[in-house]
Length: 497
Image (cartoon, rainbow, N blue to C red; front, side):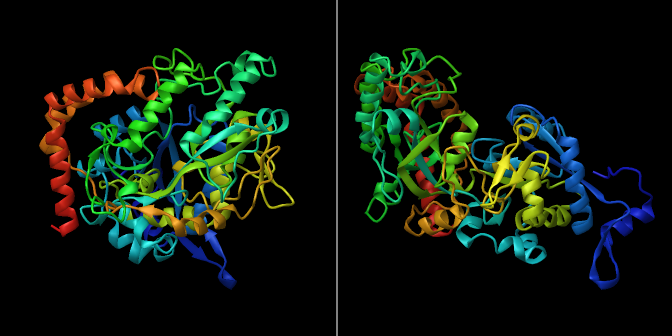
């Protein structure tokens, strides 16, 4: 890359070899100059208006601690992949199963093998997460990314409008450690629809489960997904049974199919908007929302949506390669500063002051600390600095965010990780399906799946009639060969080959 600003050769050598100087008493002094590392983060919708101000504050710390100044680029998924393919300068990049696809990009050679670095150069970073989480960041046995320490065991929640359900209707959804099931939502939907009919809530509540074409989140959450395009996964209900390592097509399995049937019932009952399969935007207020989250996420959702929500879990916790890979950061294989980039991420993931600024901005301007030790965003912070916090670094390290109307637990992450003692996991951790041998079939299958999918996952069409029709077309396109190839690779993975 060889691109650093305004330094002589001698100065550059001094920066890399000795990023900071020690004063009397052991205090660190910021280097005269520092290595600039470029970090491509996920796009939160716009570049934060106060990004430069926050970055300057962050660089005061990173220059002093590790001899690095950071430059952030907020790119969406397409722009990120284009930048990488075009050979633009970057050192670090956000990657996941759903954004800048980790397995695909790693196998394409964009990401550095950092196995040695995280274990030897940054042992503090390595110690922040259990071995099984690092396993999920491996491709062919090599660690190719730094997972974000957060809700890496997937849990899915119903999100209820507290004012409607608790205050007006007197309904109290179960709270952790008690759970609901997917099918327990029936009486809440019926009550919300009746409240609309009775004029208790206005037109914004006409459809208590308003959906967009992406469908109901978590319909396939009962599966450890191997490939979503071909709907391949292993049901968590199979763990501990003879079928524990059997890859299935989810829509053929009752754990998924029965949910699609129930969605269609809800659609026919008028709980879901009629245009769900064709629209992309949803109103901010919906009586019942669904989201993947964790104990304490009600505060985050309440703050984001502007009305108080109570949450009830109906799925999880399930650990999978996909959930571990829900948010990670990789280092460019072409970076001149791979060791230094990993060292920088050790700072991000172990220094709470730095992590809080990265997430919330500058104390006193963008947020304040409450007497309970929570982070309270200011209006300036909400409007001028709101990056994706999950794309940056340890969620659990940063100060817990306060929310109006919610009794937030400042120790929520201790509760979350304690809850993971009961998580369920399949044997796929670290497995990545190489689609190259069936790329042609997968492309054809994706087209067919997409033609049916939006209508199925919004309840618009009847899976009893449309499911078999879709499967006949998928079989003609080669979905069984894809399933067989995935099973072959997974069997080889289990055998250690």
